Length: 114
Length: 109
Image 1 (tube, helix red, strand yellow):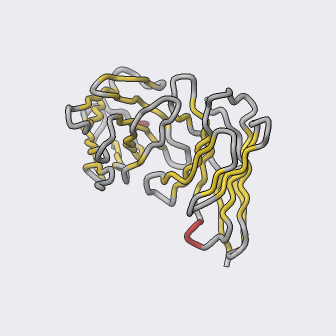
Image 2 (image 1 turned 45 degrees about the vertical axis):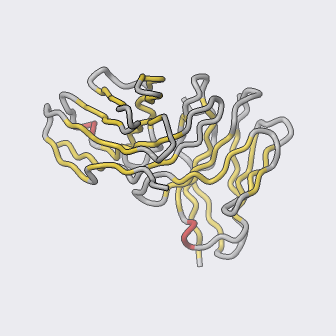
Image 3 (image 1 turned 180 degrees about the vertical axis):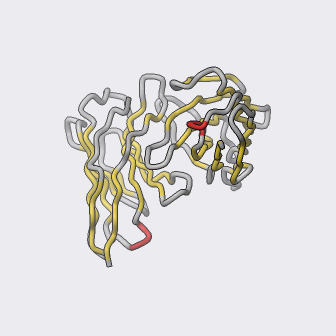
């Protein structure tokens, strides 16, 4: 069974640039969720994709967008980067059967915005 | 906002049981309680979840009170590798996991 993978591991961007982060979900899972985790805080829910459709969104502006592909892998895109976007970005995959939503996390991408 | 409250930090001696409390007084009847942990700068790791009954797996036990307003995660024989931030989570109305700040558990030799 292949776990959740994310790329890249680390990334440095400058303010105003755009970034794309990638996630490969665990085999058999149909749902991907993205989280932002600032230093010393718990993960903050960005959005979830279920069968290629956005299926819930947290309190993040539209410059945070995503995609889910037919193989259930996913991308997180962030436009017009701001200094406060510096964080660990986590991807989690699950087999979404409400109210059951056990999620399996990747190692994260550490984004630094200068 | 998170639907759970946890103490910010706890200590436990190596080899002893670590008991981590969580309050979720507004939990609804069909909402599960999930526990995850996060070792420094790694992705969170699923530990256990429950609805009404107590649950046990190879990692931990979860005790949920009869009124479901609180729960306790028990690590029966804590080791130094159990040092981590432990998150107690109840889903929101859209079945999303909404995380609080968690409890930083430090296992001491």
